[in-house]
Amino acid sequence: MDSLFLLLLLFSFVSADHDAFIGVNVGTGLSDMPNPTQVVALLKAQQIRNVRLYDSDRAMLLALANTGIHVTVSVPNDQLLGIGQSNATAANWVFHNILAHVPATNITSISVGSEILTALPNAAPILVSELKFIHSALVASNLDSQIKVSTAHSSSIILDSFPPSQAFFNRSWDPVMVPLLSFLQSTDSYLMLNVYPYYDYMRSNNVIPLDYALFRPLNPNKEAVDSNTLLHYTNVFDAVVDAAYFAMSYLNFTNIPIIVTESGWPSKGDSSEPDATIDNANTYNSNLIRHVLNNTGTPKHPGVAVSTYIYELYNEDSIPGSLSEKNWGLFDANGVPIYILLLTGSGNVLADDTTNQTYCVVRDTADLKMVQAALDWACGPGKVDCSPLLQGKPCYEPNGVAAHATYAFDTYYHQMAFTEGSCDFNGVATVTTTDPSHGTCVFPGSRGRNNTFINGTVLAPSSNSTTSKCSSRYLNRADNLLKLVMAGIALCCAMLL
Image (cartoon, one colour):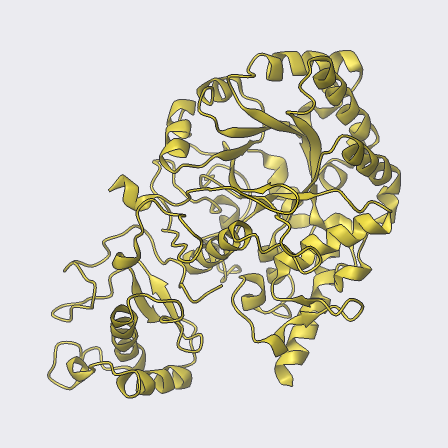
């Protein structure tokens, strides 16, 4: 049964510039935090080969030893000022937190702080010096080619991000960004960027369409178009990443790769966060994983991988903030998946494909007129046997369009052998792992029991720990939202055409 819940077989492939990977962030804000051995056991069971830690915890690094897992360690924000005072203090940190663990633990990068410019601006003046100090210590130990040094940024440091070709970094940070980018370029490192389409969408008051945030397929005439480059954008993620590329080129840096150090979608929220749902979280993360592993790249750099760390491994119930802040994880504290990722079409992503335990159902938000049209098609040209929906038959009750359509959609989905597009019906259907069978109405693929699998839906094949990250990730989105509203306006205008 454990193999049934295998979420991420993270294979790598060579892109134009580097190997692409999907990793996960490992936060520790759990009231019942698994011990390091349990964490590593989960990583190994899920074949997760890249992790990012928010510190350099000794026990965790020892548990990761001899696993081959690629590890990004971090200098926590609250340690930044102390470590960055001199070459000596940085070298001492490297000695105790890096040299003590390599080569047994496969440390491949160091993130010096997280979102410093927006979360801890008083430390910004020493940020580049600290990166240089740590890098010098790695050079002295002949580890600089193996371990790269960078710092993770909030995407809110990018202004006017749509169209991406007009994007630039907040000019007030030029005294930091110019020497930082020069350092990254000279050391063959990369820009670390946190990208959260969820917040961009939520704060836009529906100006940015949900499908655009979730990587759902858009008709070509509904894509956002950069009027300067004529590049077409089908999702927020690509637009933000390209905005960062253009912002770097504005400062005359054109060959620094980007790694997205945080991206995800919450699976639960309070009443003010209606789009923090299991369905949306699954859709976003599944589509994101496919997008990265398919070597799609971005419109500006097609085929150039943008390796990405999913935020995050566990739900962190003890961190402050709204309900959604506690529900970004792929797993609960017991290692049970919050939802089952199904990544059909992304190669050998799952060791045990769970497609045969999935069902096609009507989306909760679907327009009932469109549902009725799709039901008519399924029972007519779609050649679905809808006789169980007749009065007196097992699936007549509940007698409603959505219930009847769910049976017809699922029957079609199974008779088409789960092929791509077979659970779409013009966007009114989605795939779930929750068996919709009820009473004597047994759906195709059912094992004769309801709610067999844990918590919610999976991706429809047709759809394309630190406290500081909580406050800064959410509160510093205002600038970036103003930029991305332009993308939403462009999309909405296109929809009216």
